[in-house]
Image (cartoon, rainbow, N blue to C red; front, side):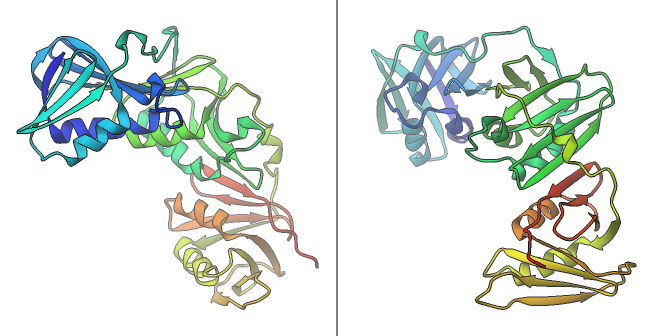
Length: 356
């Protein structure tokens, strides 16, 4: 195998493959990137069996057919140090040789024929949805996906395809985030996508791509890239029963005022109490050792005072994903879950219960 490639092009693709490599065991073939030259194209693959990426580069020269594997982390370390000029890659015996000007590097290879296939099942159903809408919807709920929860289905996002809409759902048990789109033509179904895959999809795909799935895998394919992930095999909680059926109070509040006030009182401690009065909102830290407090004057059109106590991170996560100048806050009573809403995206937050 041999090819010549521009350093920047090669480095970008090798960098994008790092999250898909086995990190704990450097002796595993899945710590390697697979390279294949075929028909003047370079095909690269990386996978840790749970998640994988295949990329294709057309801009190579002096291409000679062949295939190889090489430790992905070591390869990137070398490429990064080279000058921004063409690189010669070739194989000799059981080594991958990297050359640029008078510099030469040699890395050991494994048997490329033993490299795992990324996708075993090609009988996948298409998810009829624009990539941009898909990315925007999962981006909004990403902050609420749990980490390392013993209930492994919570370590991912639910895509709940209903008859008339598609719900994108995540929860870390302290909050429930839901973004939704109209469903035009997809049959009803449910899949749970792992958090790592959710994050990588957002990095990789900006333009139109094809999204396909079966009960075990999700595949996203564009012109020069194919991404796959195994799905979480479990039952997501019945999230719809947590959604309040009615709300006593619905307030529309300028987003910038909320963000500024919350950040002002959370410089030292993240738990806050927000008190809503007919003519003002008071923000104060719940830290017993220090005092942080601020007030904004605003007509709320309510006839009684009530409050919410909450980890401010949940509010700021939500506000960072909203698009409008105003956000809606819905309540029933103090110390009960409250509701945040902004155009096809809402979050229900469990409060910190304060003694009255």
